[in-house]
Length: 240
Figure 1 (cartoon, helix red, strand yellow):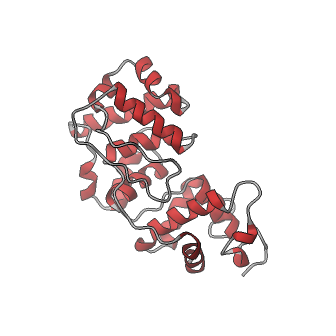
Figure 2: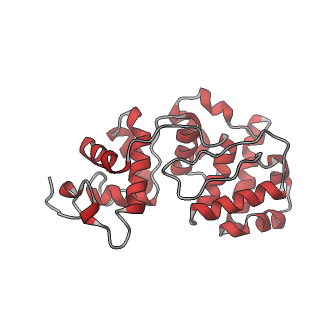
Figure 3: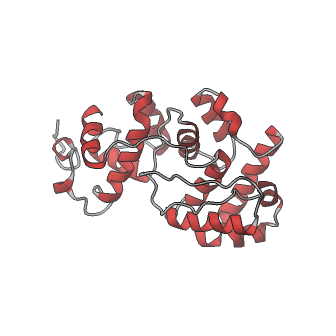
């Protein structure tokens, strides 16, 4: 792991943590990213803002190097009460450009409803006072929210030491040999909690994603550009 982190940092640099969004916006944006490109999720979130405007404070999205889109334009979060109460057809239409809107719209409303019923409003700021794994368990108790989504919210909103494992992280990790080939995505999150120090989570997540996007492509990975090729089991099954 130390070898991989060092090699990837020479190629991609070392990311610095900065809060991306408020946690409820991060939750909804992450749901919108499921099975689509980040840029499509951005369009859907901005459409959600326009369809359900609020008078809340203007937020500046700080996506960071691991994000695959252009970043949201500055704006106030949507009116979450209006989003929760909206006719389902209206919400589907508002996020249609993000893809899979008929599946994502009820998931968003169910998540908002659960937060409000548990907490009395739609804020997730209370999670900052919980230990990381307890906060992750609280989020994953919401239907449709898995370890990846929960870990993204907690890492990027609160700096909690959790390791989100998306398709890029999983693919690159298994090719290099950091994770067992048959490990599920769900298991991978907990493998990484055992492998990484808390101060390595952000760097590992961001640089494995970046590597998967720019070098270790799903098809035709560019081995000649890879800084860790000498110890990659995909390049050489007998690599040390």
